[in-house]
Amino acid sequence: MFSLFDYAFAPTRIVVVSEERLQAAEREAKLEQLKKVDQRLTELRDYRQSLAKELAPAKDEETKEDA
Image (cartoon, rainbow, N blue to C red; front, side, top):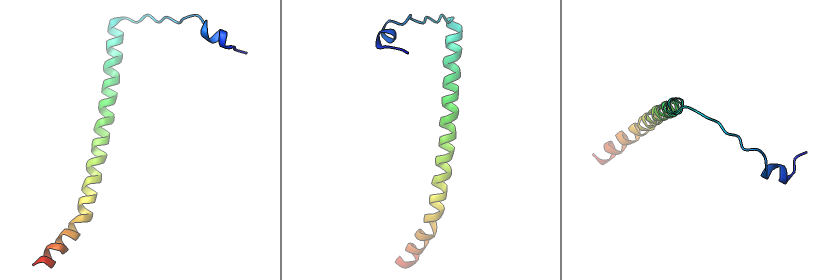
């Protein structure tokens, strides 16, 4: 069983990482973020196109009524 004392005074964990590994990990994380952003943009473009298709017949009807 852990107490507050154990939590507050637990030994510090130290991790040593080379600069190259750190930069590689940061690059990998940014590439992953970029993939997710690209995927989301594709989803949003597809959604926009589907909305535009739904609205297109309504626009055609409005222009016919105005004429």
